[in-house]
Amino acid sequence: MPASSKARTTSSIRSLSTADASTRSTRRHTPGTISDRQAGSTLPVAHARVTAAEAGESNDGGLRDEPDEEERAALNTEKGVSSNQESPVFTTAPCPIDHAQQTDGAITHVTHIPAIIAAGPVVDPQTGRKVRFATDHLDPQLRAPFNNRLTPLTRIVMATHTPWYTLSAEERQGLFNRVFPNVQHQITTNDLIYALMGNRVTDWQSKFGSAAMTAVDSKFSNDLMLLTPESRAAYCREALGASSRAVEAMKAPFLWRRWRESDGRKQGRFQGELVLKTLGCAHYPVIQSLPADLRLHNNNEDEPRPCGALILAVLAVERALGVWRTGVKLIPHGSAAYFSADNWADKTAIVHGVAKPQQKVKKLMDRARNLDHSAWQAILTGARAAYLSQKASQEKQAIVVESHSDISSAQSDGDFSAEDE
Image (cartoon, rainbow, N blue to C red):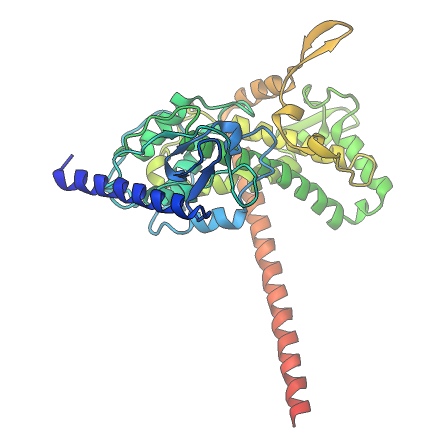
């Protein structure tokens, strides 16, 4: 490293230490710090390590997400990153990064992230609650590329895995190194970067649950044949199939593009309307946001497909239809309502004293992995169309609302002027 870079690194760390000492003397909570009550000191959160649970990484479906507005704002801060090229094919294999295409800005003085281990639970001194880390806790030079590059890349990779798969520290390290080749940092399970990556994955997973619920709610609101509780209950029962294992056996009509009940003929596996809407709205923005230099530019049929994302969409739709099964939207109380691994991942059940593994997710993943190239093209094309359709509808609604607001404002101004005269 050049002497000037080392000097800047030392200066940066020294300034943080000085600020830390100042914070300890005032004992006030300020942005960018966290309190360690057991240690009786305040540590810069950009340097802190905590357990994944303390940092907010959990299997509750990401119900403690950062607001979508903040994430979208963060994703839009990095100028010049190309994200409008689309590819339905992804890869998890490392590839060289063309530094001439990088638009993160040259990272010069950040060559190492100091790693201080917190002695106890990290809490906010004002509220007494555990802190859920956000990208604000990162060094400022790392925030934009973390949001614009590492987050979508991590989600794209997770989309190829079985739902609720947990990336190891080594796997996260590989992704981190690909985005930050000039930053020296070793990721561990107690690490801030490890926790932040996990949080962004749970945020992404929870979007499938909300997208499916929105898709079903919208269908019931807009379909004139489904306006009564009785018609909605009948629709849900039919869509979910006759048995409790209809989904894993691919005998649930909502999984298919066409389902003819008379003779059981069906077409378009995993291409049901609700599945494509959920996949499109939850995952297509991730595909769009992945920078061009991190995505694959060919159309190789052997490359990994987003099987995990597809099955997350399937499970989320099954959950949403179940909520409406009586014809009235009944959301369970407490943790039973979460779209999470605890409620939807495969597990082993004890039946009459005998352990019986449940394998619905595994069977669905096997079916998704066996889809041929043309089937995947149809699924991804349908998901994209569903996403663009919903986006256009939302934009149209926004224009209508804005127009009504302008008319009301004009009428109000006119009334005011008349009274004034």
